[in-house]
View 1: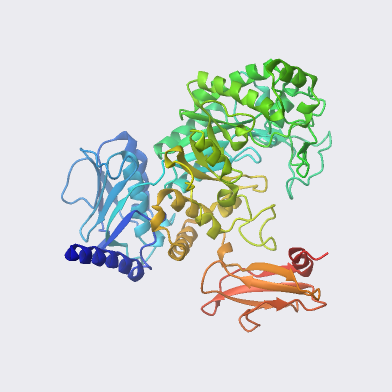
View 2: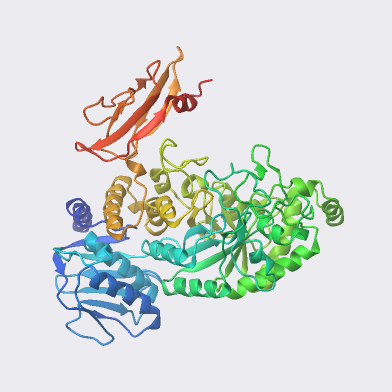
Length: 635
């Protein structure tokens, strides 16, 4: 027994030592289940041969590997479907399934002579290839030939498989329209980190983005608004003569191409039609669908304020009317066509943020409540959700909604996506319903990543470290009801793909690891080291990311004698903060922050920058003293 214990300890020490000794070479995200160090390096030969089975499901896997091994290296790559002792990289499908790795797992062996990836299913080989590419130098991400690079990968043995089957990213293409090519780029980036579910938020107040042939006005009218630039929610109501030519939509052929593109990369697409709230684009096209009959219809929203969030009052009617039978006929047509376009088993029907102002004043709603014995507006929404669930199920699909669908009574077979924290998911799981965890507290990628002094403003902040703390399975629920989790990128403040990338990464790295890697393998400091390596890879690939983890965390308070005290800290270790109140630009010759500082009486602004090892690493940040006073709660 002592010998066995000694061997276990030795193996553990070897893995830990490997992580320390090879930190400049091994930086895999998400962290695999098990990595064992072997001696030496594999070097790409001048002629690369990929051996792979003749399987149509491996087409994209082989194409991707071919590109990464040929474009940056300049080396010729040959693909063979027959066994060859000269093969450089072997992709093997197990004849007998390995129960340990399941459908998406893989074994990866890198020796000095060749590389072998084994899996039960093509998806496993695809993910094994993603890991393999991360073992090569960062220049492998280049779109052009890289010169004078030693194309080596460390010899390792990796066993890997996902913790959760649902590993999702949501892309809001309704608030701002993103092209088919943008969506495909989004898929390309997410699969590199082993995400397998793309949630497309296709409809909202600002746009209806999917062609419904039986309801042509949805895209003729509902896909277009007035272009505004600035902060969403603050725009003036468009004038009648302003052109409504900003937006767009996906034809059904576009959707078919996106679905196929995703399928080839082992991604399912979850379509979302957000009802009964968030329906202004639909109501602009068909005003009779609202309880107010379009009386309070201002057309497709262009980002003007349409709700009073402090009182949960709707200023304009963006709700479908549950008392109107035509609404259910309308939804039957929509869901029929959506179900035919998306092979995934679920359809997401929204259900969130339904401000019931206009329902409360509707005679039709009052009659519905009397007839159906509904006690309040929450039960009115529950009545609506249950009817919508029946429509979804009649098309052979499963019904999913945001956690508000719990209010007033949950539809019998509904799957809940919990966004207002974890509580809705906990409640649904305890009721025996499947749950996808997507809480604002950990997974909302539209939130600011650092201080408002430098980040585009939105009402909340989600730093990288907090995202890395996401644990989808609360202690109080049966894990079998937690399908997994996802991160959401809402795009009210995201106008283009480059900024979408900035908001996704690196927090998308964190959520990927939360959902793929074993809980016990997670380590913040180690993760940060790997993130920095991936920043370098993204520089090669020309993908944008947020460097916010290098910026200081700024807190302020008021002393008893009414002075403002500033306390600074950093999200990651090893950073020094330099600051000034004299309006000049600090560097490492300026005061170094060591303890809370008092804002000088007449100071106008605080400037900050972080350094590491004597070199600037964070961004220059300017914080007006007026903002410091707001942080301190000074009146």
